[in-house]
Image (cartoon, rainbow, N blue to C red; front, side, top):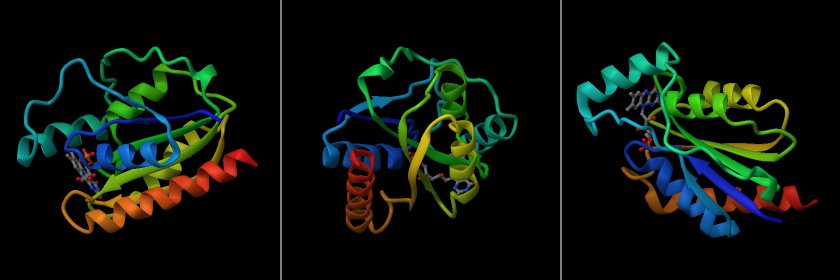
Length: 164
Ligand SMILES: Cc1cc2nc3c(=O)[nH]c(=O)nc-3n(C[C@H](O)[C@H](O)[C@H](O)COP(=O)(O)O)c2cc1C
């Protein structure tokens, strides 16, 4: 069974988890990239601009999105939470590509909670089978080792479920 981990990450947390998952289940990795990034890598400007984009569900122009989904049985998809919502880069990606009839695992990084975001992602991907969801609170800042371990355990479970 071939798996793909797709993610967007602005400040590295989702990237860390995506890479951990990919290494655990021997998956390919695809990083969603925007054509023009928000320049600031933190602080007020990032929160202000990113929060606005997220709240208005702005359509973001992306770099290449031509993934051959036919190669994959299992897709992991990861997003940071922005303004209590699915990150607008990931939302734009999901508008652009067609993911159907796949087994899917969803994960999110946040500072508080990702509950609504994971539900929203599941709704957008309703033509697929969602095998499970998981969330990680700022893994680069605290509990890094434990959260990486947790993500690997979760990935293994999803991978096993997908194989049944
Ligand atoms: C613009 C912006 C808005 C955010 N809004 C939320 C939020 O509503 N809830 C939350 O729990 N975390 C929020 N965060 C925190 C991020 O979800 C968290 O730092 C996450 O780990 C970032 O992932 P990344 O490093 O992969 O970009 C926000 C971060 C940014 C930059």
